[in-house]
Image 1 (tube, rainbow, N blue to C red):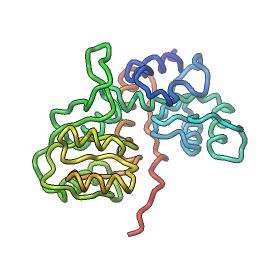
Image 2 (image 1 turned 135 degrees about the horizontal axis):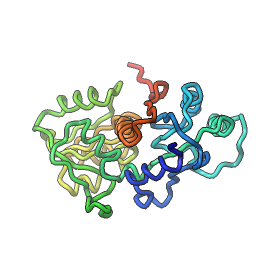
Image 3 (image 1 turned 45 degrees about the vertical axis):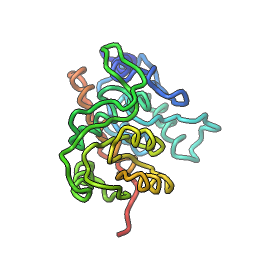
Image 4 (image 1 turned 90 degrees about the vertical axis):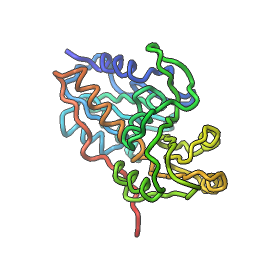
Length: 264
């Protein structure tokens, strides 16, 4: 019998809680470690529709990147979707585990998955924050290389590989070759990317001034969307859990997608 606690222990080997940012909230945020598990639902976010999906498919556990409880809750009522999701999980005995910034920084986590999706070669951790028990450096950003190509070709690759409906970008100088990636909101890391000699940076949630700063520094800055830059890790989690626990059913969410639309 596999329990929620055993799954949590395994996930902590993939992304140690010691790697999380100080302000973050990770781990088992809802449920009971002793609950037996036969089915797991994996998604990027633990939104209400994901909680409903877990109930509908008979999952006892949801594993997500983003936490179901991030800031202290002032109330728990049916008046907002977050509360309704937590209430549904509690009522149905479904647990929720997340690995957030620890998975961003961990070897094989969010940013390695993003680098792989974009075909980066010779991938390294940019400015490592530490070394794990296996002697591997860990940290937030990844940097690697692609064959030299025009920006337009690389934009097309990013859009296709990540399934983005569109991209925001500013054009720097020259070809795309040395590329840094940071899934989610990593625009503030632009100075580090520039100092590392990268000509291109793929991230999300980029602020207006950061686009101007990138252009002034000659860096191609691409905002591919929060969901699309982080979602590749869900497949990584699903495969890792299924390989570790072949007797379980580990399912990728079919209901969860980005709610952002483009009017073209």
